[in-house]
Image (spheres, rainbow, N blue to C red):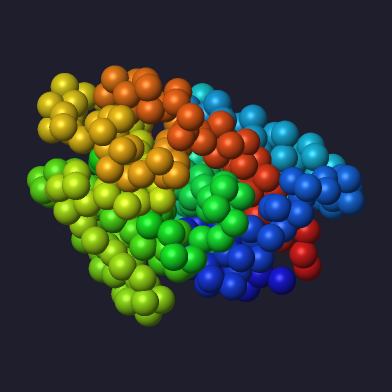
Length: 309
Ligand code: NVA
């Protein structure tokens, strides 16, 4: 049984709890049948303030596989930043449904919903962290390598929500983490997140290395990147593309990592920018396995949060 009531950040989860979620996700993927009624009669409400293709479909499909149903509130139905107080929204929704998944910009919104509601809240992506994707990525890596401990993951690009989630995900699972990004402060991970992740890595005895040198990708098992222009940053697009030139994942970067390394991306991807087409569409890419495992990993989260008393 999980110790947490919500799924807001991987940093809230112990190594033990992450392993439990991954084991459940694997079991569901291998043997989905026994889980078909696990959440029968339960309703997950999904609140989207930002675009949501993969998140919506993977949660809808996941709830269906578990026998539950979903309802969607999109940004035209609700604006958590200026409608009624979040405490009221959370309290009322908790009377109707069994769980809340929210995808929004402000992480504080997710924290407020969790604090004021009485049902589990799942972070479907905020500007601070993308924990569902990182959990799916751990599942994907365990499938590919048969283990997580001792792997070296190198993330190249923007110090964004994905990088933050990977900082915690690696620390919790015994993986070394290298971040390669420009030195400019606004493209780096938030100092508070790095400090916390550094402590987590020190406790685990794993290595956290942050640099602007692409050579640090040498010997990585995993090369990971994300868009240079996240949702909400569109106005800075030109400046960002300029700042990140030179940080594309090219075939040369993959060669530095080695022939057994895998390439990962949380999607949506922009070919020719953060990654070259020959890499993302090449034999080392495992992006569609990651996308598939979003569903299984989220199903494990739903099962443990909504299904256990
Ligand atoms: N960093 C990206 C992740 C999308 C899944 C964004 O926030 O837009």
